[in-house]
Image (cartoon, rainbow, N blue to C red; front, side, top):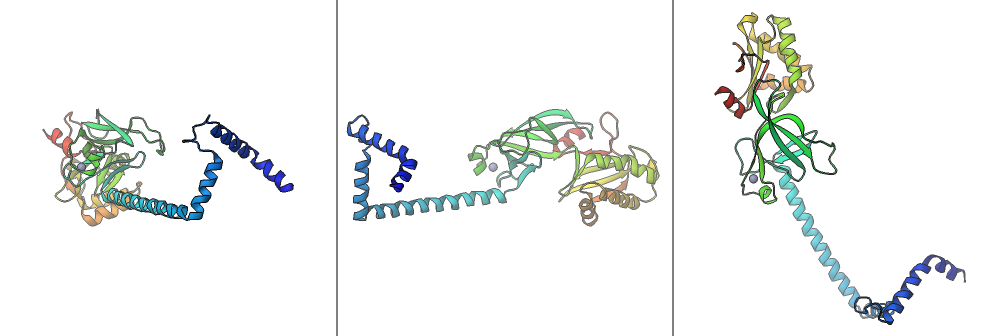
Length: 305
Ligand SMILES: [Zn+2]
């Protein structure tokens, strides 16, 4: 009696629904083709179970499900492996921006991940180099993005254009590319990026204090070398520095104190990626000398013309 009360207290709603279903099906208010009565379902279940047909059907369904899962996992794993090994463009604040493919080998190009980020560009004057650049602005589209960004500028420039590429990315709908990508607000040499403002402080204040001259007498020029990007420290003859080697060593020591500078200093010391010369710093079209001459290949060509 207690058991009946226990079951009744917990399952009365289920029992009531089953009873309603049974009555409605039996009276054909519910179509028995779509809603066969529970009594018929129970009888069929018992018959299938006793004949062994249910076991056979279940194992066949399970086998098919497992096979589907296996194929899906293997395919997905293969796709993610391809995505992992393709070079990707990533900005810490925004996340993944684009992926390079094997067919676009020139111009530092990537397919834009248009499902996750919207990119537009605008012409603006670069703060550290007196030229106009195609500055890129990013808007996050993914609901789980780490930051909520609308047209955020990251001091990056590049050319945005549609591309007809015969690769997996283009077939997946990523038919816009960015090329000639570079940072106009930072100093980038051999894969290391330093804050432009840190470098400007050293060039305009620390170096003149130590070796003489003033702001505009020391300039870092970034250019594409034969195998890697190169940095050249131009020291104006006006500054009167006796030894370019001493100026170079001082610059590397000062860079060590910047954020990310310890690694940059080590790499540039060993790779000979930073050279110092006694030469007049480049001036811009307006005649101004800027401490950093950080220009990507496209803008460099515009600038030189
Ligand atoms: Zn492609």
